[in-house]
Length: 389
Image (cartoon, rainbow, N blue to C red):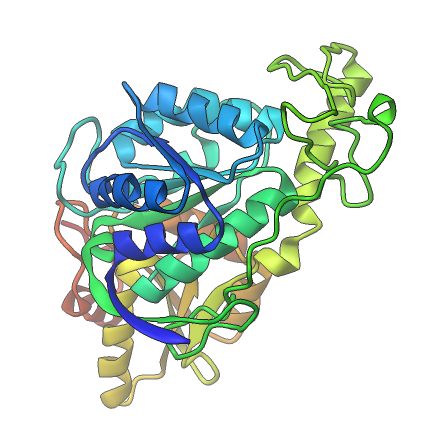
């Protein structure tokens, strides 16, 4: 075990390397640019490949190709670039290609405030690409999370054969904090750790059947077929059109229904593993604050101040925002009389919390490109209406 002092973006890059990532294709964009800069330096030194692409559309396409060729591949971007990636992100979902996409959120829409924090890509991370499919999105709230969750993202991507998004924000990306780097196979430690551990990376499972029997989209016991590498003795076809277990197009309704159901079910089977969250001082809470990413830091400070004043407030922080840890939230919120959602957007997280709890919530929203403060969360706790900027 060792201790580092890293920036959030640096921790994401180091987590990717620790997870065995050896291919990066991207286009620099604030506030994620440090990931590209560090990848350009670090990847060649460990035998990896760094490509600066002409745009984010090509970057995402390169990830699909590199992953199909056997590489653990990733990219990093921010809101405008994430928008450009959506079509090929949908391709990765349809082809069940594991890869990791880091979106460091900034204020928008469009170019917006290019260097300012926001949390307004939450719904885009879930619904940005068209079609019916699941999404796996992890959201770090500390620099330790940036490292730990990046390692977990690559593990999940390979296990589920599905793209995984890391949804950060400018504040977390540029914060510098102590990071505990565990040895391979040893769980993470410290209060800041999210408890996901940092296992030694394992190359994705390969088929062991005769090549003529290989079905690249055949499912399997967990709905996930082993993914052979392009260039191996397993020759197979991929198509962005609806396809069957062979990879060739198949437009029959019964096949389409089977494929869409399997895409959802393979993620649902891992619901327990994906239910990562922090519950802070919720045991006796009469009021619950829900927040993720940088907003969770302001919320925690507000909870401490409220507790010091004798107010029983707790905090729920999802570390996986899609699929949202709904069962855990319902359990934690069961005994509270009031729920407050703190976020740096006009109310995207609040919509999901209201849907899950089937009750109205109080929103504390900041959307002017500035960091939410503990004082604003406290004002929401003391008041009763929507607090906005």
